[in-house]
Length: 95
Image (cartoon, rainbow, N blue to C red; front, side, top):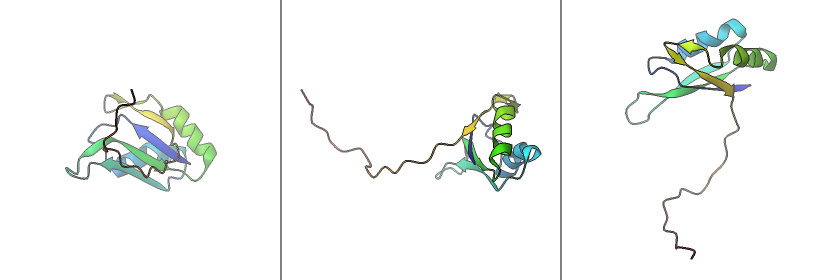
């Protein structure tokens, strides 16, 4: 199961994120998302756990837990939507 974790402290690294979830079961991967220009954390990440039951238990236990004085949000990640439009184009008023 892919898990979305938000409201992370900007000090949290990939290994820290993995350590939060390992007490609940095997963690396939843990990745804190960084800004591509600054390289600094964007305050959220993803954790992959192969066992859905362990993942659900981790979500239940860790959602709203205090980590470095921040209450993190933990939930099952939604599938990424393919969005081919880049936006930014001019749109005429409809009225």
